[in-house]
Image (tube, rainbow, N blue to C red; front, side, top):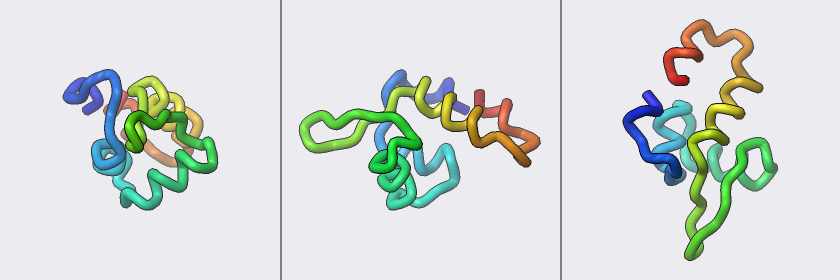
Length: 68
């Protein structure tokens, strides 16, 4: 699934991939659970950051490697 995206994703893309709402993605960014950076007032998330987040939170998810 991640192969359909560029190396840096927007919050909406990450929300779609993770199955979260955008507010939850913003919360993850603010708490540092998901690494990202701001550019021109918008959060951008490197694809590798999403992989790390998924690997840390993979418990109970049988199809998690489908995304990687």
